[in-house]
Image 1 (cartoon, rainbow over the protein chains, first blue to last red):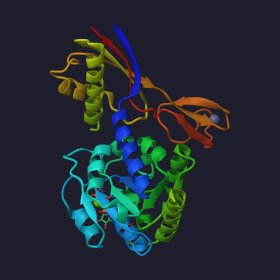
Image 2 (cartoon, rainbow over the protein chains, first blue to last red):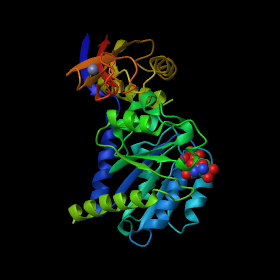
Image 3 (cartoon, rainbow over the protein chains, first blue to last red):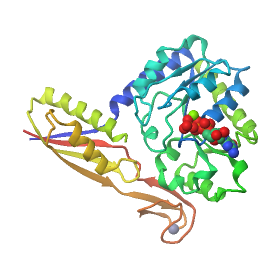
Image 4 (cartoon, chains in turn yellow, orange):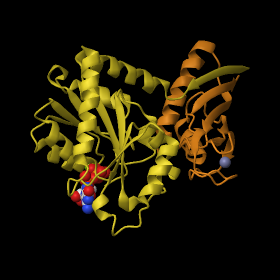
Length: 221
Length: 114
Ligand SMILES: Nc1nc2c(ncn2[C@@H]2O[C@H](COP(=O)(O)OP(=O)(O)OP(=O)(O)O)[C@@H](O)[C@H]2O)c(=O)[nH]1
Ligand SMILES: [Mg+2]
Ligand SMILES: [Zn+2]
């Protein structure tokens, strides 16, 4: 006997993500899901972003690091609540892990949650967790062919942060090529060229993100 | 490595159908996924063989349909299939292109059961 199914294999995850989203909408919480290869600068960007936005918004961070609590400690040092997710070695966060982490936060007292996903360019792109936007970081030492190798993440992201531009003179990174390829995958993509080391480009990123959150809050009211 | 999670979800879905349709054994599982979806068929098969042990799907044959990837070239005014996406049209070498197909997510299409 043949049974016709035609269903997304990850639909159970999508359903839980939807529930997360609904809860977060009720509480007026904006969620940013931050993804990149290991070491591209997720925690560094979060440090910059948290510092820049802490006066204006009430922030929290969910850390999906596989190994240890180092990243969580770096964020906690900035004085914002951090929840560490134990991914039990998984290469990505899923909606259920996120749901548990949300349970550990007082959503009434939070405007924005940043999720630092596990360092990986493939798997996190497939798992929605209930975020408002996905943001990805590509760092200049990684090379400009990343969009060709990992198209899905570029397609799913609302913004692309090209980080470590301070290293451009020393690495073989074709910036225009990277941008061209990324935009061919996702014409709506917002691209920011930043250095978390020198701080260049961070202001533009903060201004854009602030606007996204303000728009969300206005619509939520 | 997310193939482990994919297979876990797949097996749950199959158990759900097994309970409803009362079948004992799955003979064949037909899946489909885009060429650029990030799913690695060999990893998926490997994960499946491991995780399906002791379930109704143990020993089932996995049939994967890989949906082709294609770009749309504004220069040529048409869709063109590609093996690799470097944002250049393979026909006119123009760069006014967008990816239009190939990232479709993994779907369970059909179960053959007894
Ligand atoms: N030169 C330079 N180094 C940077 C920049 N941003 C981050 N780094 C360095 O890159 C390394 C990794 O940065 P992290 O912020 O820890 O990266 P991550 O993506 O959080 O790493 P994982 O959580 O391990 O995946 C650190 O040594 C940073 O100091 C930058 O803009 N320029
Ligand atoms: Mg980190
Ligand atoms: Zn063409």
